[in-house]
Length: 348
Image (cartoon, rainbow, N blue to C red; front, top):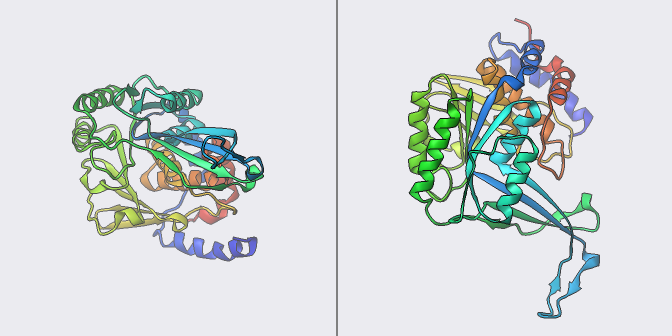
């Protein structure tokens, strides 16, 4: 999107905010609240992965002596904690304290995943390694003469296709209750579509709903690709494609990409417009960044609309970071809010 197109959108954004029926965003208040992020303890529970990039150049290809096939020569790698790890990374970048709970294998990818989580200062003591599992891994071969122009080839996914053992479900729920007692919020990352073959099984999902009732002062926030309608007693978040024709009650948060965020509660619906972002854009991880911003806002005492506004701002910063798992610092969020203040400060 060029600058002219961005300018053309500004009146539309103001009109959209006018339709919020007198609501407005006090940018200064949100920034002041964000300065206390270290006081928030947020548990990120559920699916984690290792996102691993391996880089090769066509000019360095060699023929395999054994098979006669072309062997790609890897000259560089980069690893990141994905899924719940992306949420944790964004929360830590914003200053929150983070407790991680999930499953991983006792393998090299699991070692790298733990290394990435510990590097950002997350508390990993409640992560559960098991010889019965593979560490969820997205291995992304990147091909090109220059790193900045490398293209992703067919991805190699490491997944578990057997049902999660009951003893691991028990440990997950015990660890979650332990973490809830010292947290203001819990984000559930429910990534995989194959039922009962990951951290968030049917039984674990039921356990989460019971804990949400038992600890009503803690925010429980579920992001699920395939099972959002099966959660109870929690804030439910999905994107517009995952929502489909699902009928949900309670507070629902629907992310709609460049169209923003829709808050639904009862018959009331509120549209939070997205922040303008400068291309090129990489939307991978945008939903995780949004989740981090929303939950941090809620645990710091922001209202639902303000928290969604913060989530939209965080995502707009991360999608401008190409070729990496993007994060946003408080200073970046503060700068973005003040930069776009005229879009969102609507007088009563």
